[in-house]
Each structure stands twice: as C-alpha cells, then as structure tokens.
Length: 193
Picture (spheres, rainbow, N blue to C red):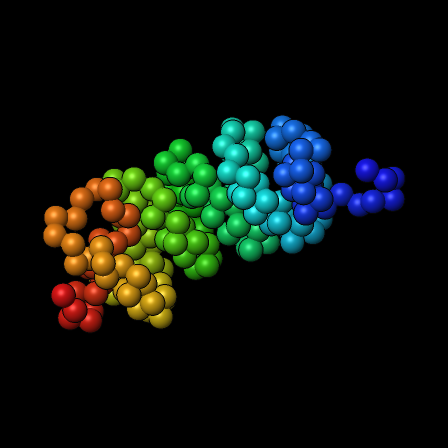
C-alpha cells in the first residue's frame, strides 16, 4: 500500500477478496476503522463488508454488540443489528430482547422485526412478542393493532412473496417463522385465506 493511499472499507474488502490480506487481518482492519472513525458512514460500511464476508467470531460480536447498544447514529445501529440477526442469529436473542425493551427508535425495532426470519421459530416468536408488546405500550394500542404501525405497505408487499408458503398444507418449522406472522395479519386484517 502506498503511503498516501487512504485505507477504506472498500480497499480492505478488495484486499481480502484478492488474497492480499488474511481474514484475520481484514477483521482487525475493519474493527480498527469501526472503533476509530468519526464518520458513521465508514463504520456502517465496515459492518456491511464484514457481513458480506459472512465471518462469525466473538471479537466481531463484541464490537457489533457495543455498537447496537451505544452508537449515537441510528443508521449505524441498524446496520449492526442487521449483521447480528444475519450472522449471529440465536446467539443475539438476549441482547435483542434488551434492545427491544430499551430502544426508543421505531426504525431500530423495525430492523429487528425484519431480521426475524433468520432466527429459529421459537426465538423468532419470542422476539416478535417483545416487539408487539413494545409497540403496544409505546402507542397505547392493543397488540393485535400493532401491525398497522410497523408498516402496512411493507406487510402488503410481503404477502405476495409468501403466498406459496402460506398456501402449503402442513406448514412446518423449517419454513421461515415470519411467514406465520404474515399469515395471521393477512387473515386478521385483510380477510384473505
């Protein structure tokens, strides 16, 4: 690397993909940029690149956990939560329950909601119940009214995607858990069976 060449998430990613640095060097460089950059966009991009590498280790988990709990910039927290739900799945359930309970940003809660499909059926249901409770308390509404506050356009767009699963007989636990939620919403609010 030339002395005047700036290090960037793209450069780190390219160097890793091209075999110029090891996976562990890439992790260290991404983490250093995350920890020392004042720019939220750089931190978020580092997290996205780590996600592309599909790397799962607890050094990364510790950094992602810290960001999801204390990062001031919402978009960076959301990026960290997406990484956590995609890569660390069920290891992050307790942390996500804590975030749901203490988070005031609807966007962050929606990020967790969108990541539910990566979890086991049981953990997805637990987190979904926590999200529904949080929305219900925050807006002083009944739990069964919550879906309208999550994003009715998003839900409607998903109905078509999940039609083939919803119409299957004997849906089992191997189907994404979120399908069950969409089926409930579809029946409850749109009268579609």
